[in-house]
Image (cartoon, rainbow, N blue to C red; front, side, top):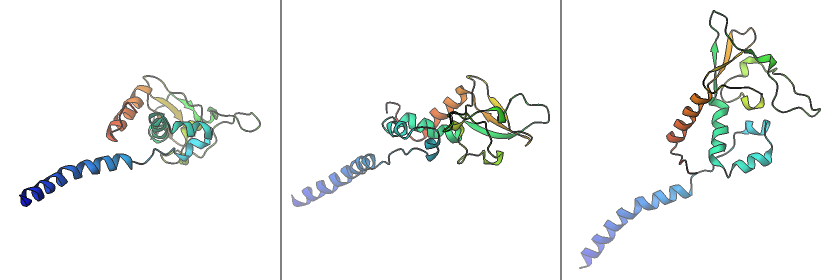
Length: 163
């Protein structure tokens, strides 16, 4: 009889161990942290409030590096907006809106902050911003394409849409 009890305990242990790991993993999952670049263009209180809205925080974090790409301009003339005419989204301390003046080589994922500027995107068309005489173009995905990319990202990290 003792052997049956020990055998049962071993089976129960192997059945319950995976459940313990699952519940432990859910409790220790890291909180979503705001990308530091968000503080360059949003109030700290707003960003702190985003912590209770993880999907929106993920959206902003994802937008910073995945809403655009830089491409070589084709030989023919590119239809687009000269980037030097784009203003900052928020005025400086004097209330003045400055124009884009960053070094074009800084426009890359991980360092560039597109949320600082008043870029406009189209629902179904890509939007081009000409990077001066660099021979490069900053291209923003259409809103439709970006939304698809973001939804695929949420699926890839198993983010529940109910969150």
